[in-house]
Image (cartoon, rainbow, N blue to C red; front, side):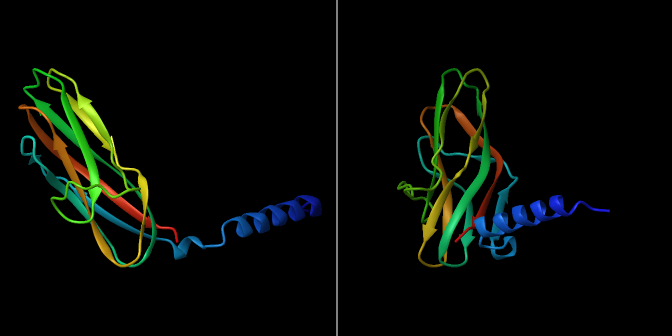
Length: 151
């Protein structure tokens, strides 16, 4: 026989959880874009590596990652990425991900996290742009973007 006190406590916790999260999980929409191909980035120029379409107005949580390799890496290689509202843009979106790192020699690797949020007033596509500064060769080895609509 089940204890009526523990059943009442469980029901209370469930009611509090439902009140704390008024949007059912089914109302959230997630969109994913990924790249698995090797892309050689242009030296000291903007490279467009990925894009994701947000189909309607709202607030989105952006997450993902992009991986890179630099060679022959005789010097440190600064690497910077950002989300933009058009391909090839050097202007980052204000609250979207904009990670940076320095790939260390010799033959270094880097994985940049792409975590942030973005509020849009209409359907739009956002682009992942990256740039590095030196004469080494940098390649993107792949990555993924996910946008989950939360509002």
